[in-house]
Length: 343
Image 1 (spheres, helix red, strand yellow):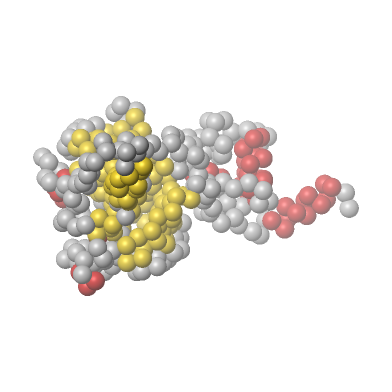
Image 2 (cartoon, rainbow, N blue to C red):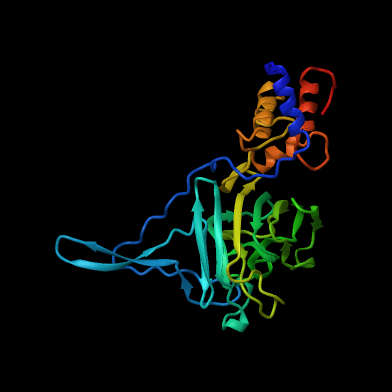
């Protein structure tokens, strides 16, 4: 059998298959930087967390340094300008920065909460600090979160001490139900769209199904100046504001595409494992052109030789049926060969 027939047979066999959504993100726009240590002998204290103060776990570590005259033990401050775990006893979590697969893996060991001797959902956090929010500036924020079991989370941008600043209740200038947002589920499609213009309209957690991935994008306006801001995900236990634990012990969460931009200045404030930026339908490699390079990428993805990220997969669904399969490759081929005018 000649090669043409063999290839046609292979395509026919592939036509009944769909490609599951896969996750492989581009490198972060810039490397995460480490903060300088304080002068020797000084103790560095972290600012108390939102909604209550508690001893932080795993935010400092002891290090020993040998000098010419003596050996001293000092506390080394952890760099809060990178994504990290913050836990208030008895809550505990474990974070792995999986650079090979370009994602963060967060394991809930103990969510805390009232029934375990803690306080509420903020007992266990995945967070980053080291940026500022300016009043009346326009911002865009996006992230992708996956969970291996059913649960919920609350995410916010706020000042360190949660003190009210102008219209920023509890110091929060944004949370997961404020601003114009879209939450897309790979299980259920678009599961949430909102345009809350009043900050206090909604304060609920965002639910996520077992085995699902949520791709979230939102635009909002800064309602106060926050010189030292933090972006937090609350993943802890039940309490006075949270009916159920966010996640049960042992839950594993995956975070990707963590990006915060100041659209007024054009500055990227946070960027960790961002997805490919694509503005043109059918443009798979992000060069704003639809050509044979994109066709090759789709064909290789079907054969399992190339892995596409979520944004690329979204733009590869050219027939709009919610899945990426051989029919989409055929549609792109028709467009490139000028048999159709638009995608």
